Length: 336
Image (cartoon, rainbow, N blue to C red; front, side):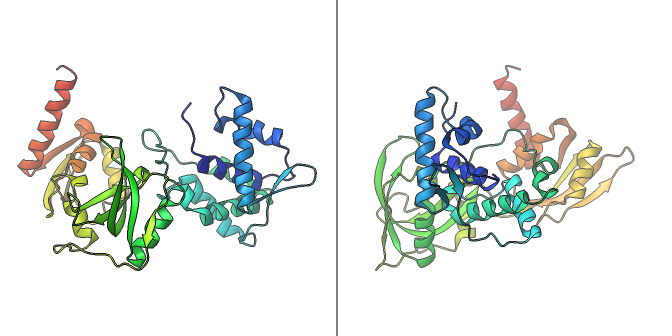
């Protein structure tokens, strides 16, 4: 079983207790949430549960009654109306919030308050049976970020203070100290990155994945101000040229794609591509040609491969060659 981070377990505990109509004993709670804990040794799992409950109590989110039962405490958003509670529940179901759970205590409180509100309504308490989210392929667990990291990094970035921190290199798996000027934060594929600059490091300007910050405290140097590289042109410009998006061009080109699957065409027309100026030419056989503006990136190739033989690049020749090269590599992998 994959180990579930403590902050994720505590989130589920909070939401579970928020939906209960009466106080719960430790054994009752464990029976309901045991699947979030390692199953090898029940005694160790129960002690882990006890520590999670104590953490929530220390945060003043739950209470321990005189008869040793646990219950949700007074939440700051208990007076929300039904429409707000429904909106929050839908947001929770879709789970599209990119921030690490441990950095979103206020959101966890909102979700717990929404659970409590909906539980009081005969009709609204069954919302989980009425709304669902089907992830594309497999749903990924977000990387675990130590509880203090996001808040400290965000605060230092917004206030333009330098920071010292310990960071684990992805390749070497060794930790060392870093001293940087935090210049910006961006989200990409369920991960959070900090863009930082230090003239004493190579490369001087780079990004850091927040899940690779160690659990050591981040030192925010409050009497400092950040330094910018001479060629700094802002976060959007950095992202265009970042090594994370290796070889990404910075100018869009007109792309023509022949989609032969009518369902794919309808889906793309119902949910138009943003910032691409798409136009469609429907052919007699029901297929269609999409003309749009794209950056010719590896991500574009990956997106087109999703449609398999139902998407053929007509123009430009360079993108068509990128698709051919990728297909040849795939054929080599499969020994074709």
